[in-house]
Image 1 (spheres, rainbow, N blue to C red):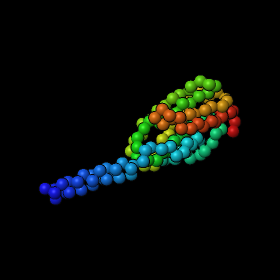
Image 2 (cartoon, one colour):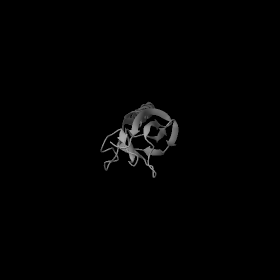
Image 3 (cartoon, rainbow, N blue to C red):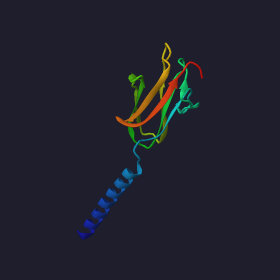
Image 4 (cartoon, rainbow, N blue to C red):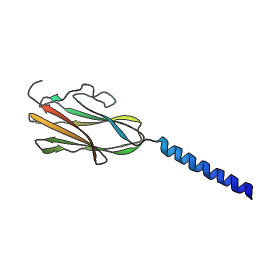
Length: 136
């Protein structure tokens, strides 16, 4: 009976240890960079960085993440203190990735300063500012 108890205790200890190692080995989703630009690479990261756009440009914001977790990334685009758009995307089980958020205006953007605030699961993780002007 004593031998059975020792083996059972060893098995339980191994299960607890393996569960702890597996849990500690996974990293939660983390934002590593926020990029702004006019074009994207095939992996959805920004290819041409800029903070100055023309009214007809598409503004690309790319959020780079790492970790094996999941979450919701959202961007609050604002102009003149008013919300222009608030897109959200769910991301899950990715090691290193880029999630893109394009901002377009069929009639062209008004000239002036804009802000993009980035959120991970509803918590602000950063802000990018940019400007729309008539010519570069």
